[in-house]
Amino acid sequence: MDRLLRATVNTWNGLIAATRSEAAFRQELAVLAAAVPAAFIVGSETWKPLTLIAIVVFVLIVELLNTAIEKLADFITPAHNPSSTIAHAIRFFMTDNRFRWSKTGA
Image 1 (cartoon, rainbow, N blue to C red):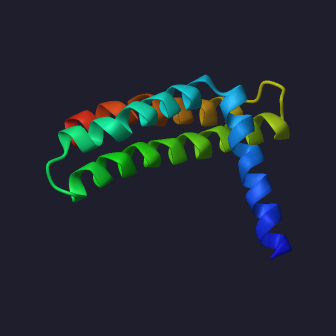
Image 2 (cartoon, rainbow, N blue to C red; image 1 turned 45 degrees about the horizontal axis):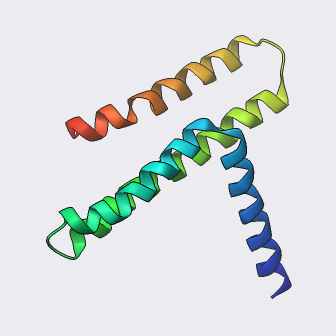
């Protein structure tokens, strides 16, 4: 039980840290807050609002993974590094285009 409590506290601290340090995460939390009531207004069947909410939660998870990778790359070598630059460019491409992909269905 102690391990579960510590994991819960660490998870909460991670969410607080991401909210304080990442503007994109705060924006996506605002989208989630707007999407939850909107999903139940727009969705006619039970599964549709749940699917819409799950998609927004998935975007939040991807943003957290993105942030973790970026912070880890900066921690390993804060100095300019060509490999780090490539990783940041790929990360930017993935996060910048995820909304475009979701709109086009690609």
